[in-house]
Amino acid sequence: MEPYRPLDFFGLEQSLSEDHLMVRDAVRAWVGERFLPVIADHYEAGTFPMELVGEIAELGVFGPTLPEEYGCAGLDSVAYGLICQELERGDSGLRSFVSVQGSLVMWPIFAYGSEEQKQRWLPALAKGEAIGCFGLTEPDFGSNPAGMLTTAKRDGDDWIIDGRKMWITNGTISDVSIVWARTEEGIRGFLVEAGTPGFSAPEQKKKWSLRASITSELVLEGVRVPDSARMPGAEGLKGPLNCLTQARYGIAWGALGAATSCFHEGLNYAKERIVFDKPLAGFQLAQKKLADIATRITCGQLLALELGRRKDAGEATPQQVSMAKRNNVEVGLETARVVRDMLGGNGISLEYQTGRHMLNLESVYTYEGTHDIHTLAIGEALTGLPAYR
Image (cartoon, rainbow, N blue to C red):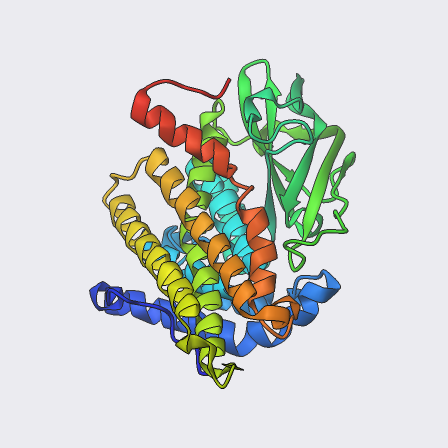
């Protein structure tokens, strides 16, 4: 197989700054040298390579857009997008691990936390010395987080939290969990530390997607936390939804990383695979498939890059993020399905990347807002009419 050369049909690399290229190439090299050699075994075993967390932290990819004063890299949104693209070229579980740590734990602490909370958690999370998770989704309330049943009730200077959260990335290994709960004052976010009495995070097993990612349930039974554990700046459902917007932006780029990984594998396979005395790539059907997915990936790249630039200019809207997440994950999943077909029987082997990406992207298609929910978000932006109910 030829060395990885991502699809760049429109020469978008030429419009990136030297800093962007440096960040991208550093992550790309690490994924190729350190992550890809071990991911198949971890995927098969259903484990995440925790031994690499220190190296991931050294890359500066945990909360990379947050200020340097908290131990972060202070990069822009385009750089963060490129990071997510390269991480998900390795595996969606790797990008999810980093995305949750940065966008769903570090970002809300920075945006909504007290200065004491920022000083305590952000440097440790940036160094990978602490791991965090984001507890919003519940067993019966995924697309409708407003229906959450988890409650937090005041008891003197403390809060008592009761409830369950489901499908929580990193939950079992987390040192701190951001738990969203309903209070008499509305929805609030709390920092719940591992080991707090009444709190547990059993791992969810028997997955066929995101196998190299730790997925957990959060169980809170009379969990007592002090008022200092409440994030003072988060009020109402807008708080967690803003966090999800940050994560969805990274997914819009990450899905393209999975797509380009599959495209690269499929293109090279088609050139090398001899069928009826000539390379598979020499047949019209194969060329049509390659042309179609190359076009879709290129459109996704243009969308992600423009969204990143708008985000850096403070002009991006949640609906634009929904469009990018919806489109690019669909592009990634369709690319993986087409290439899996081109690989024939080899497409189901872990010796190839595509089948693993295809299964992972089935989850990415659903989480951080399902494809259909993002469709309705865009539809409401176009018509002014909400169609959620």
